Length: 359
Image (tube, rainbow, N blue to C red; front, side, top):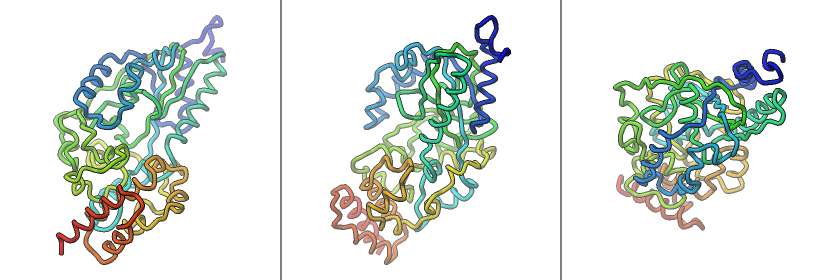
């Protein structure tokens, strides 16, 4: 431990290198460090909120400036440790062939396995425990997409990648198929060099977005984003957007699938992220026939639990409305035409109307 303690004080650069090594041992592909100055990101966030691009995600402004000022969220914070973990569970060409499939459902690749919140949070806590052996008492708090945290600007400052035109983080050597997590700490750690942007003149993500949610480079109108529509939006999906959703019943990956930088993406070997219950190749009609007990059982430990059973059925009804007309599709929809949920009934009726138009 002599390399990290000098005259009873921590040697910050040596501590940082040891944290990186521990992070790698815990399965993180990269660990970076940043200070807590987010004034530029704060202004971009405020502009985004003023345009009401957040839709019904009222939590985006509910906590005021805590999102962009870490010291307000966790008093005493001096540094942020950002980590990334690759999650792509299979070759991305497999995902591409499933887009707008005539009968199968598309579920965002990040949600096919175990809930990433649990995986990353557990390992970040272990990392904090190791750091605590060097500095007692250690003040810290772990975050994994679970609180008012500007995780992408923090990760960019920590050198993990740059925020692309689709507003996701891109790493030059690893693409964008990875999760982010943060550890706020009262340790004063040396900041890494911020990542520079390398999107250049490419506009692939803007061109492939099914709902034109990327309204300008680096600007996303969440109200049109399929991830928002299928996950965050709790009510009725706007009818004009339903045909554009296709078979995407939970989230959307198009902007990542067609991003040229993802030619460098590496398939994850984490067992936790492997697809469960054949969710990477399921028929829409099969998923629509799950009763609530089956849904609860097969989404146990999954990020999909957050949307609830009726929202799940709502999304699949839209997918079935966009599917190729067949007796099985019609029958599956008719079986739900008298569902207890008004939300489900509305989207089932819309789906049936789409097939009547095709007759």
